[in-house]
Length: 400
Image (tube, rainbow, N blue to C red):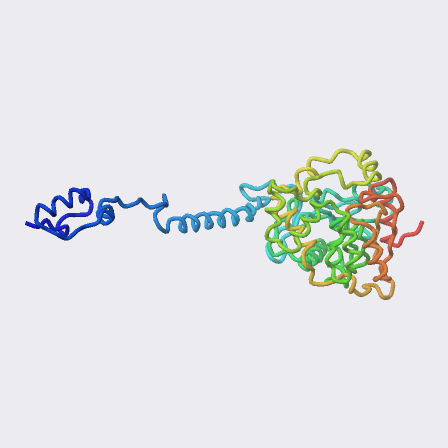
């Protein structure tokens, strides 16, 4: 009887070509089966060349990419701030006012009582500082303050010290915070504003949004945003190229990719801001000489600036100062057309944080600004002996 291959599974078809031929002869079958055909039946199936099931590689790639995106998103998200006065936050040690939007603004008063003061000044601190970094309280002559009848209030800008963070902070909101501070403290219809370093840069919004409230303004070593539209590109690029590479990149991120500012200044692959790391490398020799003579910082000066978190203080500050401004200061009009007040810019000619090249250009574009350039002086020149008294008397238009 014929043995049909249709009844035998391929997996057990193991007869050799000779055995097949012999079987066929015994059965009287004359049809020949070639050796190649026989081998094709006896050859085992080759295993798959891939060690992964079909389609698993794409799935793994998708999982890896999704995981990377999740990690990247978390890396760019700053931790929540430690709000002063909250259960997990720092203790409130200074008086505060409650602003129109519910935030608190912390302040510190210095000089004569405001009720008897002839001059009332609001001081705006710089980057990585707080209300305790008041140059007038630190180095101005107490006798001069008393004789002139000067009251000075310094405050923590949002997110610094003991002032609540402001996630919606803008240039305009800071000017309005200053106006509301003046109103709640009863400083009158007009007051003076003075700012140091980045605090000096952030005085420009006061000239834009509340010029009618100002009696006079002084900007001491103000930082400059290189992206103000009216800066000639050759001058701006020249100054920008003089900065450390790490600071150039830090400012680029703050300007073009502000959502990456926290990650950039906390990652360890590339160096972040040299200023945020408190490096002394950018200080000029005149600065180092002044710093060597200053008393050590107080505990409040050391700990309070960042105590609510670096993002709400330092990093948001970078985004505001070096982001895209809604106005160009070089297009401002004179707030004192009748000489009832004055605007001053004070600079050291060896300032490596805010080079004088851009300041000179601003003074040329705004002839109503009184520009003062100090020879052989750096960013810290205001703390030199007698300098704060000079700045104060110029602001108040007091002659000896």
